Length: 255
Ligand code: PEP
Image (cartoon, rainbow, N blue to C red; front, side, top):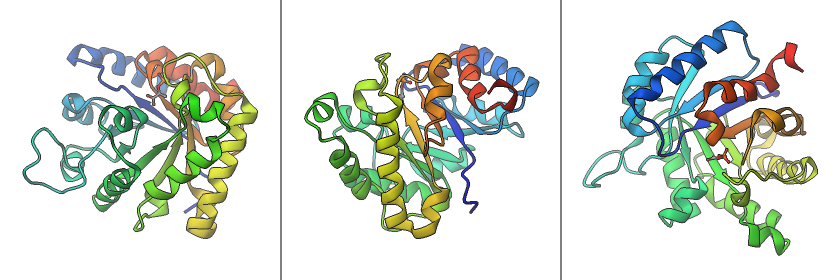
């Protein structure tokens, strides 16, 4: 794998999006064709739109991912979706361990590691999310919390070429608040050190995304921080113009 990670700008639509949202993705495709970016672009819609978007993005510069998967390949797990099913419908990525799943579904880091292993077992690149709560930051525990989550959430079998880390402070998600560039640099620097410890030299090539209230107006500053190799974007990924404005941080002519 290359030592210089190619950045990734990933959109997480969460529980948003209907068939009518496809007009917005059409607009994004047009915008991406107009001006090429030096980053990978990924959309993670709800499960219900995966098949349709797989057909829509086939052969384009946009990759498709899901927001979660079950650790098992198949079986009696009503309402769940396996990594094999995601691969079958055209995904190349899956997000695991998003803080909303950790909070809403009580997902532990151990379960997150199982999901990541399942994703990688189906050749999906897994975006493993970590991040502290506001109370943990206020108590000065950020580095310990994130380091602990990281250690337990990366599976023992992890393939560094299929692993992406997303640092998402829980208090920054959907709040309009972001850490300072210095705070982001501190956490991403610690994550990079842990990745070196875990993967040796290959740790340099892993992408570490920042997520939490990224928007066109702050993307350039956040993406310029050392060891920030892209963004995981929630709300601002729902509008093609906003998402494209974030991708601008990786367009040579926009720097
Ligand atoms: C997210 O859901 O991963 C996220 C970062 O959300 P937002 O960009 O809306 O803060």
